[in-house]
Length: 92
Image 1 (cartoon, rainbow, N blue to C red):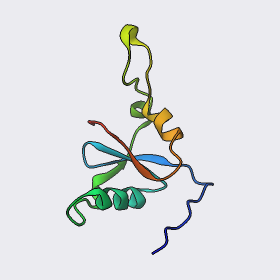
Image 2 (cartoon, rainbow, N blue to C red; image 1 turned 45 degrees about the vertical axis):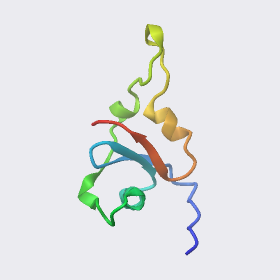
Image 3 (cartoon, rainbow, N blue to C red; image 1 turned 135 degrees about the horizontal axis):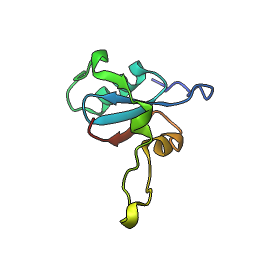
Image 4 (cartoon, rainbow, N blue to C red; image 1 turned 90 degrees about the vertical axis):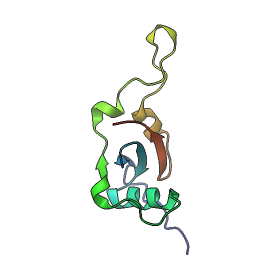
């Protein structure tokens, strides 16, 4: 089955699926599909397991070097992501 082309007019958003995984997707159902495709068992997650990542989490400084320098944020990683996909593993 061919994969539908991404609608470039819709921004990718960050969604929690479960407690630790974040996916870049156009909508919650797409994030759910991505998460379930990555599991070894069919349909482990349901739509109730999906929630939007809040702006404060997207902007947290992560991976800082010595002296507290900014290494990256989830928002920067999301902006650099071109296609719906796994974004990061991160605890809520």
